[in-house]
Image (cartoon, rainbow, N blue to C red; front, side, top):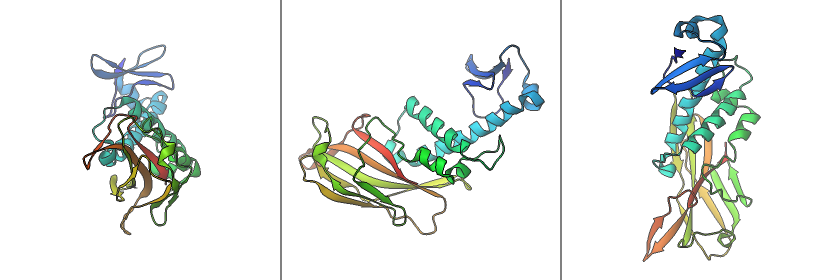
Length: 244
């Protein structure tokens, strides 16, 4: 048994190596026999472990950067299931990097590939996934438009009176490891409203550098004497990637 080296503790099995927590500390054990921390850092047989550890740490940092940028939409959620899905997402995108060698693959290079973009497109953060069959995202103008949004087709929560829609564009700069969120104005659609066109335009500065990931935020609202109150439970709001 050996202590894990690095700031990102691993849990699970990678290439025959078991990573787990023991008495609150991250440790690793090779199936069929033990090894030392020195072996992890220096042994040729542990090269694959070092490669996986490096890429895992990179994906974890990108995941945190992306999720933190969405704080205005997601708030302070402690959702382990979402954390795991996001980690799986960014590991998959990293794997789409076909240029770099093992241990050096990057999320940014994966996002440049069609396979990487396809993985994140349509990613839904909550159990409430809004139908977008009448929606279209224009990357040039950073505008998302519902051509014929019909609120009556949705299953509103019992006390909800409106649905609020808002577009966000995350500019993810993986060179500087920075992320910024730019938002459109929010549009409130009444529960019994007629089908209508709903344009949502986010203004992104021309000099903003990085991947532009568009997300659609939506939540049910209750109108109480002119004051609107949002629903924060998982089936009361949602966030969906609609463009890269």
